[in-house]
Amino acid sequence: MDTNFYPFHYLVLFAILIFGSTLFVLLGAFPLARFGVVLVSSVVYILWGAFYHSYSERLSCSIFLEYALLAVFVVVLFAFLLELV
Image 1 (tube, one colour):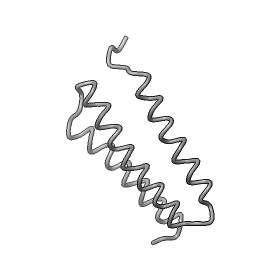
Image 2: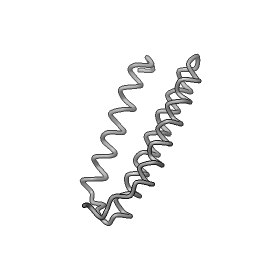
Image 3: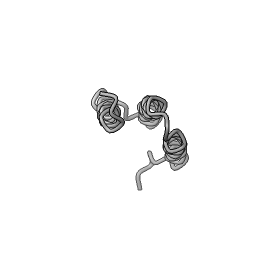
Image 4: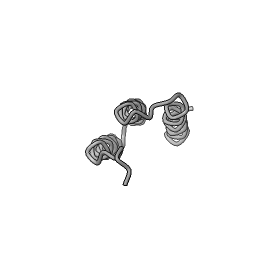
C-alpha cells in the first residue's frame, strides 16, 4: 500500500471543487462572475496540488507544471464557453 496517500487532503480538494461548482451554477446570470469563480478555483487547485505533493515529499517542477497547465486549460476553455473571448 502507498504510504503517501492522505484521504483528508482529497476530501479537502473535493470540497473545494464542489464549492466552486456550486458558486458557478448559482451565478448563472453573471458570466464574468462565473469566470471569476473558475479562475479562483483553478488557482486554489494549483495551490492544493503544490501543498499535497510538497507534504508527501514528491513535489517537482514537472508535477507543478502539470497542475498549472491543467488549470490554464480549464480557464481558457471556460473563457470560450462563457463567450468572454
